[in-house]
Length: 240
Image (cartoon, rainbow, N blue to C red; front, side, top):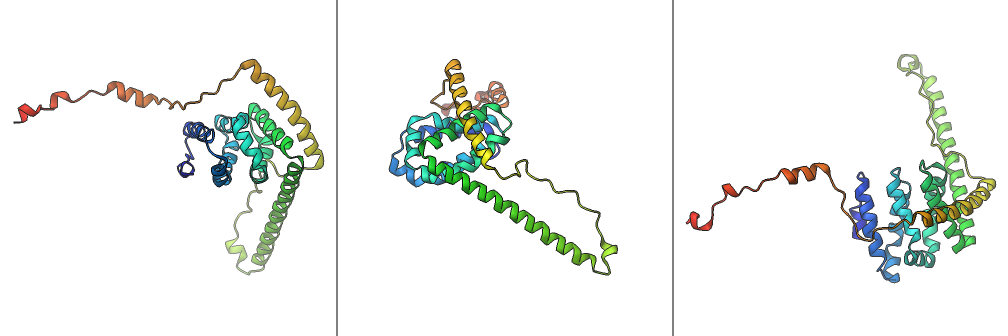
């Protein structure tokens, strides 16, 4: 899909605008065409869900409230869930915005209801990947320790010795999810999803179907201050 090639990376209002336009395209896309673009599309949506800008994450998660898009996802859950699960699980714990937590739990609950076995398989795969990541990190640290030991054996080591490095900074989510974590996630999904639906009914949130370009203060001022240069233009008769 050509729209993904021009996806904004540093301008959040443009990302929201792109998500609006993308949903309108998905509302009319044929299932056969959806299959061709679903993998790069949901890789981009996974990035949007992980966005620290809550409006971008919120707008991406609203796709799970679209019945037609959910029918497309349900038909292709075996491809889509493995792409989306890591981003959804990680941000269900680490995202700073509480509203995003409720929307993520709703998306996870819908995925679990679609295919319980696939959901459990993705959970186990995610745990295995986290274990591999921790093992690779440990291996890398051991290799660096070996290099440091070899460097200390060099007679010139005291001359070129650097000050001791700062302790490594690890990601907030370093622990591999346990079985208790998964059970807690499933319980939380139920309660949070129900609460979110109640809140939505109370607030009656309406999604605009057409994109509205964000207004820029400087652009508006420039347009208001602009004056046509009519006094410098000559008519065709004067030119003759």
